[in-house]
Length: 314
Image (cartoon, rainbow, N blue to C red; front, side):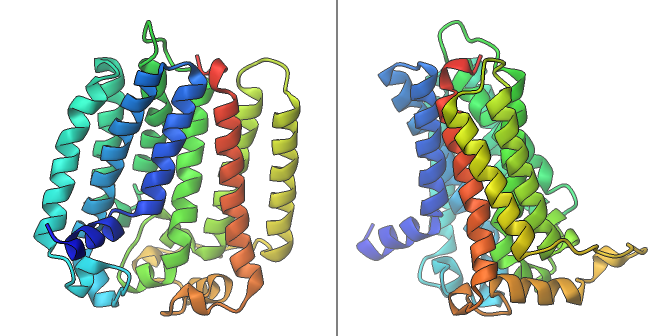
């Protein structure tokens, strides 16, 4: 395997989100009381699972990426054979099974179901009205995987599962925003595409803010200074989005409305996120870019609160 192939696989695995989810899982495992070996087991299992998800995403999307002229996709450009990416995805998926079992069969079952849901999303669920379901369930199962691997295999707390589901749904809306216009032109009809850019932004903020509240108050103990600070910053972020991107009523939904993209949504996507068939690097509108970064900031606050709540996960 030459350097160009290794470089192409590194670009195709969605390195940033893959690394972020792996590091978050490892940090949560450490804060929850898992041993060093347990933290390593979590990192290896989640890491291989995320690699399989990233590679399978580009494998299944290769035709759409090619027709859209995605220059950031080695498979779409022909710089990396699709078969190579497909094999890499399957190998990492197979490796994920025994690595997940290092945490016990209960934890492994939760994690492997989460990974399977992500594969189903990549295989086509992303373009349907059920696109929220894989994110909601998989992100609830990820912290469950960590807790079920603790000594005694305790049940994860209800608030932890709810917070994970809220984070997953909010992340789904946020993740789709940058490519919403291109997805609509390609015929994608997931939930964010059906509600449009403006409401996707607002739903992302609302769901992530709700996750902040659940994480802060869910454990039942007194809310500490860190949680109060996190909630204050979240509130400020919501206010910032309210000022920069006011809510607009989407209008009545008529029969067959979901079959064609709303031109106002295409326009709103282009104006707010710099996506009118061009890279968002050409966006000169700071309000739209700022609003998207606010969503990411709220997600980071949620992650920090969740890791801080580690001892109370059961």
